[in-house]
Image (cartoon, rainbow, N blue to C red; front, side, top):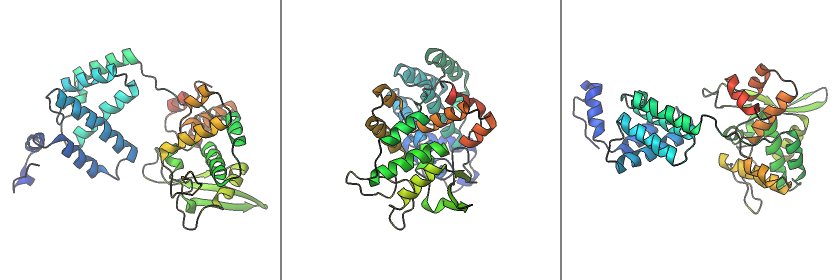
Length: 318
């Protein structure tokens, strides 16, 4: 790595950019991602790392610089990703990441160049703009999946996961972040009910928090599951070994595998199971809200969406 001179504080941005060109791009990327850790969502940082490393390798194969990058290099990168069958959403994400890494290092943003804009337009005409929607787990499908669970410790975990996910419309990252200490049980007129504090979400990066209320059967399923949790357990939804031992937490990527396993046990058609993802419960619950006559403001509030067009993408295949 280049050693900065003693008067580094007096360097202009242009001088600093000249120095950064001589820094290994992977090292600069690692330093940049370390600098923004905690300020950006983990998923965003992970995407920046994966996409930009792919771009670095592409530039090295072409004997070109990646930081700062030439607009023509990015345009050619878009062509390669298009030919490699990357989705249009995936390409947009990669180009957004390239833009962000440049701006975080006070470099000019090459993705705004007309050559890149033209290639993005060409890519969209070729691949389209629509993103593949996750399959839906609506109330009918949920009921079938619940019948496939039992009263074993794994079955209790699965019931709680399914019903909490449906009632709260939580994204998979939000589900696995829920904490035991944030479960609030209240008694009114002799009837117990449960609310869970969602401390942070995609549309609440500043951790203002939101209380999510559960239905009666989700409340009962969650209480039954919590009785099985060991003392001092932090995360509400945990992983589980093959032997049924509870692990401290659950990875977001495991949620869709649990859904698929339960769906297969319920005898759902394999074409339905193929479309299931960690987002499917959120999609199904949104569609059920629309079918029940919920207004757009209510749907946006329940699902914590900031844009109405995002909601419409969820319910367009109802």
